[in-house]
Length: 392
Image (tube, rainbow, N blue to C red; front, side):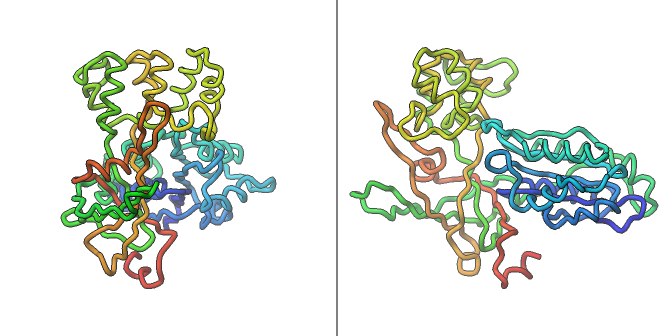
């Protein structure tokens, strides 16, 4: 909360993987850069509901966990806000950015519930809720830009001590952008005879600007398997250079670097279910839960659905989700190895019928990952006592 009597702001976040925290912190940085107003992004559980009575504005970024639930660090706040005796908030203006994944049934449900409850308590929206599907950096930057402009042109402008600029550009948070690093060690830990393939990797951080703490993880931005991309193109009967209306990139590049082809999206599953007479496939494709072992969908990828549904290029592209990074826990100590990140990763490979399948990032690291694009995912909820002063 700021010290301004006319403009009093609370910025809160609820996060499971750190994305909502990053977006909330980016908003605070952009607001200060544009207006001089300092604010701090805090876990929603740290926000006392009583403090909303003395705040003029509330900005929230929240992800959805599990079956449409609030993340653990926002659950207490939600329980207090949704309680039957919660006080009215007619004086409060708010904005909600909801992060989610539309492949799940309860897409952005936590943000939707919070937005609705604040309205029920009499609070008014600064701007309509934005629901982000998958990758969040660009949508959150656009939301931040619009919201900071709105605040700077309205409530903050009347605050005498605020140095307001006409436009607001989000502060660039380089440590959260993917950077290229070298994979300098790739060592098999399991024996050749083992039915599991576990590898030790070391990523050289030199020149990346990344410094990590105990408990942090690293996000690997891996491209799709070239063999799977080629198989999908062959099934569609089009070349990699094929261009689609509304897309700047060729189809081959879209499938390789930008779209998720390993795990079928919910909309793609629904489309194919409507196309096939295979009762087992229809039963498996129609559910929103993770495919169970033994079901038709278990272990299958987008190529299997393209074949079953006889999809066209446009139908396929319209129903693919953006390719997302894969997150791995860091297995090294920053005290002992400050310039490298160590990872221990089980490579996912298996066969099903006449096909061989593999995990997107685990096989990339094992087979093709001499250079990798990564970004750090800080875990501020886990810090060793000796690391507190360094990260505060």
